[in-house]
Length: 272
Ligand code: KIV
Image (cartoon, rainbow, N blue to C red):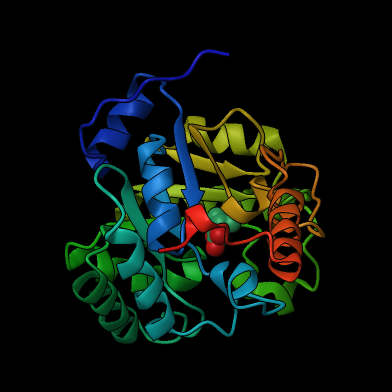
């Protein structure tokens, strides 16, 4: 298998736009801590998303709703310390932008100032337009997120594919155009039909990054713990597992446990 080389040039929103123009696909994965961010950055991943999926895979909550702004800032500042090249984008947590655009701007400013991150992401279209307008006008790069929006899970009631009906698909295209007009630099589309995602990517000029949205978009994102096989129960069709770390880590822990119990660890060579 050939390894895609990457330049050491820092990834900026401008670089991502150039990648779209020359049809170079964009890679994006989630990161929540320093050690993982360093590995992801060394591997050449273009965008690290400090996702509110930390609420699920780090904190063990059922949904993304409970995570707080302080917790997102803590994760983001840990990630930033591990990164030399990638663009770091941070999710605005639930409750920090939906109702009040001034709160949205204040929360975004706190993320940028206190973590050193490069951009924020938020979910939704026309309902959050005032927040997007205000944040963008403060000079903060914004990534949008449409389709399946996990922060609205109690409204949807299910994590199944979105926008399969004509009306919802038309609203999604309208929202994507509106977000582009408002000045977002990229858009995530989650769990929607591949044809619709491709149509959006061909309609708007900014990069479109898909998760469960097929190959016709400008880049792909996955939750790192899922693609590494650390999480086991989550098995959507779109998820490709690149490792089986749950099994590998469990084996390592079992070996350590048994070496400690039997006295095989440490040896004289491992002692002072
Ligand atoms: O929080 C997250 O991990 C995300 C991705 C699923 C895009 O928003």
